[in-house]
Each structure stands twice: as structure tokens, then as C-alpha cells.
Length: 161
Image 1 (cartoon, rainbow, N blue to C red):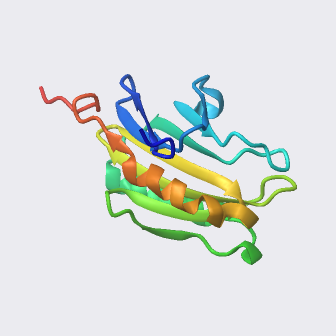
Image 2: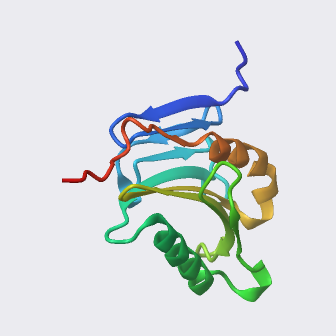
């Protein structure tokens, strides 16, 4: 058994699976409107690097409209110019891949985020770490984002009548 292998987490109710680093703590309390938050075990400067999953309805938008909305929101909310501009691209496994900096109180943060819209839901997977140590987490974050899948049988579908 490989103790360094990512651990798989499945949320059958929300219909997704993700692989997260071994030893990270999980919070299923729903705080910050999340389905799950996976925390690095160490606190550094009052912050724990983390991966979180939010599932939200996209209302009357179709996935393409939702992606356009997300692009606009990131451009409007990105950090100060010194922290670097937001990068928005397509993720190889589907959806959008966003990377941007945010002011985290006294601690500037960097976020790598994958957004998938399917049916009437959006799945937002956010990976967050301090700006000055983000690159040390990037490989683990990329594994999390690449592993994220929606359970097709559990994802909501439109029904035609």
C-alpha cells in the first residue's frame, strides 16, 4: 500500500468523486456553502491550505452562459495588479480552469479553481494556499482537479415532458 497515494472521496448525494492528498483533514459541516473542505494538516500563519468543493444551481443559465458569468466574476474580483492577472483557460478534462490571487486579510492567497457545469448544477473545486508557498502545493492541487469527476448517474438531468 502506498501511503503517499491520493485518497478518493465520493459524495453520492451531490454526485462527485475527487482524490485528495493523504492525511488531509475533511470538514463536511457545510460551512462556507461547501459540500466538503479538505485541509492540509498544518496551520501556517493562521491559514491551512485547502481544497473545497461547492455545488450550486446555475438557475436559468446553460453551461456556456455560466462559464461566461464565471469569467466575468473573476476578472472583476481579482487581486491587486502586483499579484498577477487572473488566468482563465479550458481544463483538459472539461470545464474552466481559473487561477487568481486574492487578498486574504494579512495573507495574500492564490487560488487554482476548476469549474464544471452540467445540467442545472455547477461544481466548483477551489484549491487555495498562501501566495508565497502556492507552488509547493501546485502538484497536489493539479491531481485533485484532474481527478474530479461527476457521477453521471447521480447528476441531475433535465426531463422533457
